[in-house]
Image (tube, rainbow over all chains, first blue to last red; front, top):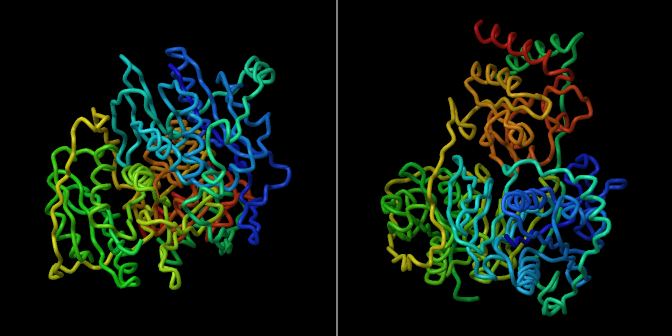
Amino acid sequence: MNMIVCIKQVTDPEAPPASFKIDPSSNKVVPPAGVSPVIDPYAEYAVEAALKLKDALGGKITAISLGTNQLRDIVKKPLAMGADELILLEDESFDGGDSWSTAYALAMTIKKLGEYDIIFCGREASDWNAGQVGSGIAEILGLPSITLAKKIDITDGKARVERVTDEGYEVIELSLPALITVSNEIGEPRYPTIKGIMAAKKKEPIIWKPADIGVEASQLGAAGRHTKLLKLFQPAREGKCEIIEGESPEEAAASLALKLRESKIL
Amino acid sequence: MAEYKGVMIFGEAAEGKLASIATELLGCGRKLADDLGQELSAVLVGSGISNLAQEAIAFGADKAYVVDNPLLKDYQTDSYVSVMEKVAGQVMPQVLLLGQTAIGRDLAPRLAFRLNTAASLGCLELAIDPQSKLLLQTKPVYGGNAQAVFTCQSYPQIVTVRAKAMAPLEPDKSRKGEVITIDAGLDPSAIRTKVLEKVAEKVEGIRLEDAEVIVSGGRGIGSAEGFQQLEELARMLKGAVGATRPPCDNEWVPAGAQIGLTGKIVAPDLYIAVALSGSSQHMSGCSGSKTIVAINKDPEANIFREARFGVVGDWKKALPAFTEKLKELLAG
């Protein structure tokens, strides 16, 4: 099984909401002080999906990450979890992209790699929540795709994928190669082992520039966008919570019940 | 781009009728079409769905395009993208609205790439810019910590819209409209996937999306047994039980109970948040609730910035007392 996983470094989505700030003049998020970036949690589910198949069938996992200022200790996490190779698309021209320019760069990278059975992406990334890069890569490469996967089995060269739906899930069969986006229902990603962390430390990522994947700068990053970001803002919160006091939690809770009844909420 | 005209909605069906999201899209699409001074159309794709055309017209469409074919019984990426590519090529709408559903999330981006345009998923607000006449697409980003307004530089401008973000019009059965049939033109061999099985998770009692009261729990509940206490309260209030992501991932509750950006979007009259911190990712699924009430032991928890009333304390102590007192009050 030859697998590719697309990952991404993001601002930690688990950081306290109060630490989240926007610079309105640049329409950009101000990285919260003292909070280290992380691998996008949805991408970690994608890594986990690939590792589950590797556990069962063996094979090779190549992770690809696109961005600037990628911290080695952060983006090497898939290696520590059990992936075999890491390719970093690292160049200023990749900056400021949207789903289009990102999917294009990743698709061209995958094309250059050539051999693959499954490409995994997270269902969306936790920063822009666009949810399009996976489908975009599949369309550019002409591959069948399944989004929102929660379980993947391979038998006789075919994939059986459980896809999350609004009512439950559906089981879909498709032949490989294919692209699959992974949802959190796949289960918690594994923690890197000490052995994995040591191996990742020694492993050097492969760094590719636009010329390495045969792409013009005009198709990348901000220049390759199809969408325009007009405004980024934090919605106003009313923030007038009335804390119901009491001698004990039991007493406060009973007063809360009374309050809801009196204000005719219940 | 001059030849592109009109607003189109992709109308999903549910139990032989238009799904509620489709009627919401028609309500929103009607306003956008009127602002542009253009037509609103609905596209209905499936097998045995022709009867939905009149319903779409009653809910505000000027035209209904029907693509009815046995091969379209189940949603499959290849077949639906191919059909919508054909419809978009024939009708050439400026704006295409889909629901932020399991189908819309899959169809919208792949179709956008096929048509060499772009999509925005999970929009909360849509408007026509008075100057440029482009669609202003407002959607939550950074897990709901922020919102972004996008425009798309190419036609059709494709978006998915979140459930309950838009209001449907009152249906008017006397409304007249044109029904146009479009041939699916499908090559079965081009459909590379096969749906083997569809599994509906059992829902006991009221569906989350329909509930007027929701009792929701977070990581702090700690176990499936803990959630039974939330169920007891929900039953008493004729409501439903929801959860943040960790209880679903830990299988204390079914995955279908997840409320949030990647789960269900709810807007009940009363949302009782128990032992959940109120992460942006979760709140963006329930912030439309009329009243939010929180029980949490951490006075600094974000949920107290979102709630109308709160109790600071251990839920294991507070919740039984709350349930008991309510029982007494509601009986009297």
